Image 1 (cartoon, rainbow, N blue to C red):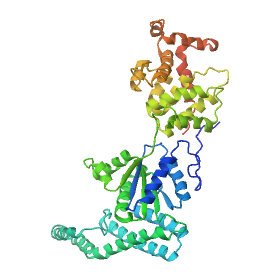
Image 2: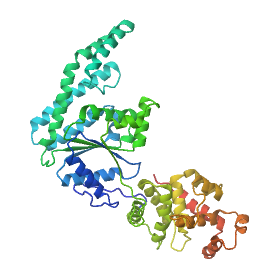
Image 3: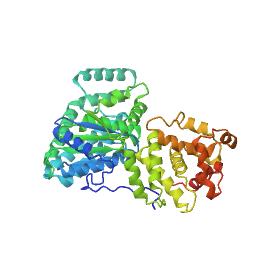
Image 4: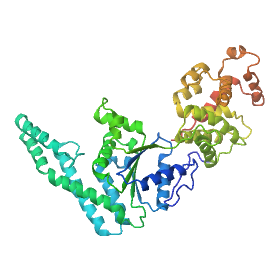
Length: 451
């Protein structure tokens, strides 16, 4: 038995070999878009935390490799300590080109130009203390305005700052030429990579939404101003809503973060997530896969676990990562149980889910400090009925929770034909009180916490 879901190792040549969630078709469509477009292309791949974005792009890299399309993977979160988005991206490109270039001179030229651009960026950031995202991208119409600013600064504040502005103006033409030369060199690189049948280079930047807001925004701006060229395609992997929050953090709450983000992205797409298909959906497929991976001894409870977990996962819109945590909780409960012990699967699965989505509610269940009606209100489970399409299994499961939580006076007051009246028969051989069920199973789960 495994408490923690084993990490899926995706080798360079694997592609979609272990495609549990059947996302290969989407990967192929994305590959076709990359190879057939001649634009300066920046694509965003949106998905919430824990939806399998990183696993998908690793598989997609394998597919790109099969098709002779070179790709570079950059974990932005691992690089945000550098405070220099340009060098993080440029160094990843130069490292890849060093290993795969068919012409070393072009690789050397690109590195030399990248170094010069990096030095200029660092120089201006250090001197002025502001971001230099627009280095060399000043329009001619801005020159006069910048000159006026220089005059105002000289008259009103500091000659030193005025000198910096004048230096910036005098260097403008040279820097524009440097930037253009760098971009042309980058655009030429894909054609000189070994075994590149596509003429493209794909750069995947993952974990953008986990970065410090300032670094995430700088990555976007550097790609737009310096790296977005023909023959080089960027795939930005993100949780769009979280990245928009990062933009607001940097530029203020009044900024239209959605519109601002669109300035940097040509094409938007989302990680596929099938939840409505009754015959083949991501939740059921992944639950069955997790049962295999965790190797839990359930003494024949597998089918019941699946049937109970699916409606809860759909109701709470659990991510794949959350489902993994639920299975860690199930592994803890089953590992501390025996074949002849009482196992009420609906109750076990329910508390395994609740501990993941709402630890405070779980704590109240453990201590018996919450009523059934309050529980349903806090978890959005009010108003369930057996007639509602797609909710019958959830209604049945919550009847078990109602059976376990009603006070004795409430239980005695329900109708004789209420289905929970017969649930007590399951407890006769175990000598367990109805009101002790939830605390017993919660106590098992609370003994251990796996992070």
